[in-house]
Image 1: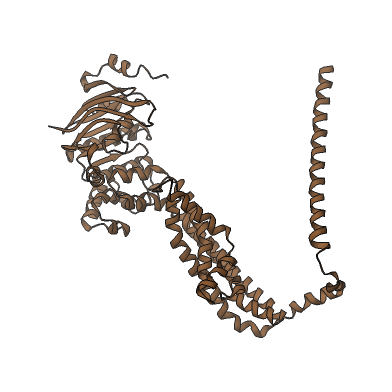
Image 2: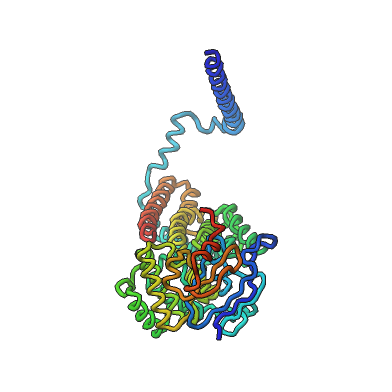
Length: 250
Length: 270
């Protein structure tokens, strides 16, 4: 049973602008750790942002957890979004807030407006935050401000925030592009470990094919808004890779 | 050789043209200044009333015979001025935040209605002088500190809301995106994604405005709105020039205190 079903997805940002995604279809299974690879400008970020509707598609269909993502209203969209954890290329933390506040902000979708005004999250949320911060090895940094941390630490705060949502799907948008190679590998290993532990499927944009083949079980290749490959990592060979990246001018 | 000479001549000619233009501009400014001087100073002053250099100095020295007895009567109005500035600033903030919200392009609920209305209110607040605001409110609510507070508040809205709106327009959009992605509602996105980013700017601006509002409150009394200005007005009406100087000194002291406090507070918040 597919968790996520995307059919003929189309996006254009301006009414008469170029089509960024030109009819992409795929599905994601519960145990997938699926990489989306492709050259810059292929539409990877746009694709991943359509799934939680940070970007509004201009056509197609997205079925997530059996619900039609594109037809839900405001409240329905918020209910869907809180089940989707997202991890960003530039971490997207609130710099002036503490690590704890950043992690707790992952609960906002479950928290009332008045409670969030006073940052009065329930005890159970704080408890969960501490457990997760332990798990991502940040327990010594709970009260630090987010901008005091290193890149790798900041990305682990981002991961903790996503896990706070008790997500049923993780979206990763180039999670390692702002990190050095060693830390990138650590972050990918951490996410893979957590995804298995919490049994969450992952859809991961990634520029680095090496990392994709190392950590993912499945690959979707995107080129200029069109899906060019969809299969297991084992089926991904040199020839297909060259084809996907053929348009990239180095 | 000839080419080089021609080039030198060309440069020299352009430089003398520039000199000529500069001289013409200076002459034009001097002519306008002379015209103004003649019309508004030379022709418009009652020279016989000044009565020579000695008379001028005699008039000035009346201000230097300080009326020290007034000192104790200045404490309460000084405190009133201070309170007027503080309450006016707080009230101004209350109005400013929603206006800033409507007037920031990236968060305004409507670019065609809310945004222009908010921008107009910002301009209106600043283009009307605080004394005019005070006159309006004295007419509306009568004499006392209240019209002063309202005037100070109205005058503060423009600056605080404009700076806040600009701060909102310049935020980093990435935390906002993250907050939308976790399922936060509009207010939560504002509380967690936007306000932490703009808080230092807002606080700094409010403290700065408070500092300026002490100056404004000090003159409110001239139109009947309480504080040190009222004492100033009374001393002037009684021709007690020594008392006038005492009020000016009190205003100076109050402003010095405000500026010192503002300096350290602003350092603390940024």
